[in-house]
Amino acid sequence: MALFARIAVLTVLYLLALGKAYPGDLLVGAVLAVVLVIASQRFVLSLKAAEGLPPPVSAVRRIAGVPALLGGTLIDIARGSWKVARYCLRPPPDFEPGLVTIPIGQSSPGSATAWGIRVGIAPDSVVVGIDEKQGHLLAHVLDSRDPDAVRAEELHIYERRQRRVFP
View 1 (cartoon, rainbow, N blue to C red):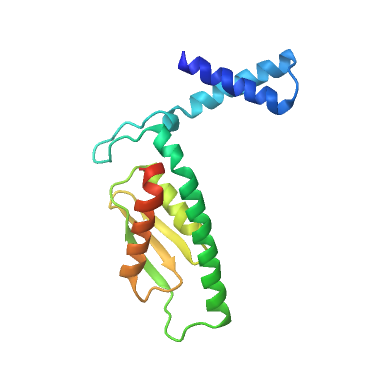
View 2: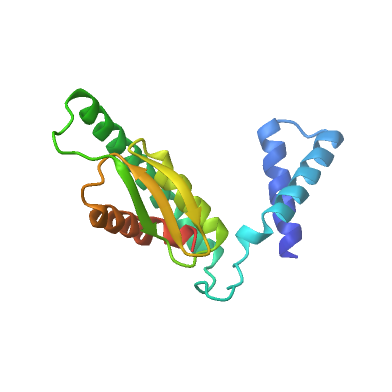
């Protein structure tokens, strides 16, 4: 019943977005709704805990964390842009760009990918690689003088923003 309700709601939303309700539009909306519901089953339903991974998180809790993740990522982008601009206009005499290994633990492939995208989207860091088996993310950062501070900041951001959405 819940599956049918999701399909019906998505079909109605599609028709409302179109602003018309011809039989062909109804059919296309229903087909798109079925495809979307089937494709999103893994994300919408609680994920099964794989061996060594954290327990499943409810879909409502994951979706509730999206605004904080997006807002925090936008703040990271703004801070990174400001940092790059400062370093381009007047570089500190002792800064050292370099590689930093960030432990990401035994996370799910989706979580590791999201972590890599989030770290790499800010202009002051570039993800070089992710080793899911050993649980490390290798990032090139603008200032690697204190790699422990870089690691601590990334782990703090993960715990505060990303973990709820991508456990």
